[in-house]
Length: 371
Length: 215
Image (cartoon, rainbow over all chains, first blue to last red; front, side, top):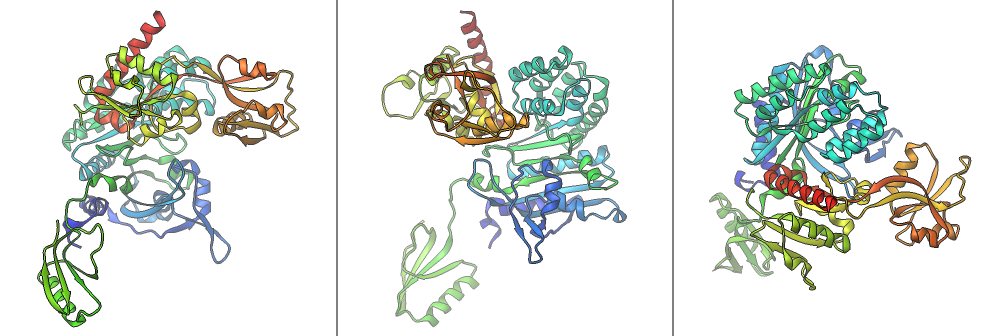
């Protein structure tokens, strides 16, 4: 297949691999199956808890992979040092709204090691450039879980209440947040700060100074310092103003700390990229390291290509039962060697778009194709 | 994408008509919306909006999938289906309550599995799950009040507006689960790429809601 004829998701997978390799992220290949238990132990890390499971020949319960990060973390060996890998793999998930499981192409990168300011900035840059590969009109929303958890740290509320507050923050539901804070006994100051985190957003260089002025508690200082470093790095990488600070990007606190990201491209109705820093996952899996990464959901970009405008094939050769197969073979070979694509068949298929048509009945005859 | 019309899903019915009136007062009129015909889409280029009439339960689906940028959906639908959308405003109309209801003298015996009939299985499951209560869920499409009367369930989880239907059937609200009203919701990607227009609409509608409350 010629490069120009690649589907949008196939083209993106190739370009993303080249992007990740250019920053030293080695291609990583994982199998399609993994022990079911791995996902059961880390259910909250997955975007959806439904898993396609089956029994292996020895009776062991297996799963078709719903996620790649867990396998990379599980297989990483500490003695090998820092891990920088990229992948493009199929995962198996049940989309929201039903309709059964689907095979979804996902590309991404993972870094396991000491996640310092450079590592975070590089990951943010790769995420932004991944989106740019898909569309020039993109937006990367970033947040730091340390800010929201720093505000909540001062409030004496149970875990279920925290989960409810996170859901309201995720929905930018300022009115619901005020009501929930009153009901849960969150302090007036805590409620004010949470509301400000929901309503203040924008390009990181502009929104971060505004956020720093709202009077966040000391528990947020580390997260704010990380965000300041990231804001400076977005300038170096030339990513402003497409990287936006948005604290409604939140994730499970049991697995994520620090930077988290959601990416959008114009034309796709939902987020096409998500990721962040997942140190708690590594600790849960007994690894003495930090981790950060993201995934791009290539199934989301399949529809971005719009209406089909090119040709399916250069030359359509139609024939009947009497046409000499040797003549057909010679004609097709000549055309392919001449750089054209050829489709040979009896009758004309519906819906096929071709540049030229040749009809052959025993001896070659020429006809006009349609475009 | 900025400069294009904002697509807004309205729920068919009385609530949708009231929500449209609010949007019109906020500066987004399209009188053709109220014409009695079979058209499903209406647009006013000058106001920058295109309206769609859709089934109330489907509004959140249209918005989540980006078929429309915005929509007016009941909080009951949002609680039940948990769409991944932004909930920008409480329009403070179509107010009612999501309740557990049953015979007024009903006593819940924890040693028995509670049979719960509802059109909202996720809301019922969440409510009782958070309380560690073992329930048997009976999902119905309508006439939920009939279930405890004929012994199909012990209680129901349903929307209660005035409570008249419950009273007429010898039932009463037993517990409130959540207050319900109409909400303005937005597709997350639209919020990024038509951000100014979406936020301006939300601001204007918020002002119209406050004027409504003050009137």
